[in-house]
Image (cartoon, rainbow, N blue to C red; front, top):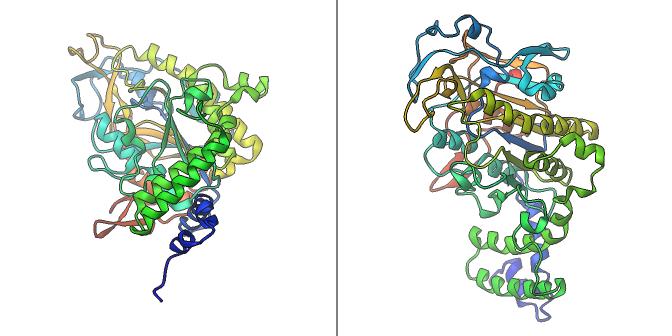
Length: 463
């Protein structure tokens, strides 16, 4: 007799009970078997990526440069690097810096609340990317590849780690009011199975019915939905029996089951009204505050990767009026970030949750010149800067109270212990227990990895 798969056997059971149970068994099998064996012991089990899309200015936030005041209004004391738009003289920072914590790391007044946690934060001041354009830089930061379709970091990590919660997606993305530049490509699964793609949520909504489309059915009861899904599972199984190991079909079957299970748990996790008044006050008002609190609740329930954008488009892209715009944006995010770090530390989750802050690049220490359609004829903003910028990490085994690398005298380019985006990805994977050279997926005849043929572990980041 020819051998048959377990699924074929279940489908042929005369009672039909095997097919009825298919959805649940498939789900449990997927969650149990899809994990990749860790290469190293690791504390980090979850990631919360705070993405300041548009490019926050490092010399106005976490990379103090006293020389900007000295050379304000004068030519840069270094070779003027090629910028995307015409730029001119050095522009001082309008914000004051001061040291915080036992480590004495200097932080701008824009992030004074976050700075209270500086002894838990590893500040990388020597980041650099490839080009000064939003689209390729967003792709590089999110997928490790600036041009071609590749899986996102969240997809790689959920592929490697699997899920701790069968009732919620393992990779969730929140952006209030719409999409960032490049839209869903930022959380794409690429050639990985579809279940590893990020689930997008417009966090500008407060009611769960608005946050998640079709979370509740107005037409049928839960019992009727379960019967429909059981029938659908039998039909899909018949279809799958002739097409073994089809990842697209596997993903489709799983998506139906996950959507059904989410109706119960998602209704709870996205509703923050049950939090204490003190907690709600700590996070404060606004979309970013609410999504940051939801991120903590998601991690508590085992979601692996949560990515939070500041807002639709590129809000930190301040080519003019940087003083007012950066201040307004920081007022929206500083308090919630500090509250998140406090909450994670209080509950012990900071040890196993890697929190990442940063944008796709930084901004120039020199002023952007007026250009039609660019900065509205003003001279009080900064252009894109991929030569040097800042990203920080907290928790998850990252070494707190530490500064890694440095930019030059005025913050134009990374010059000491330079950290490329590929290096950041390699180190993130190391903190999660993976060797970036060994976490691979075979596609189109070769083994792909997040860092491609690049990347090094930045040992100074490891706690």
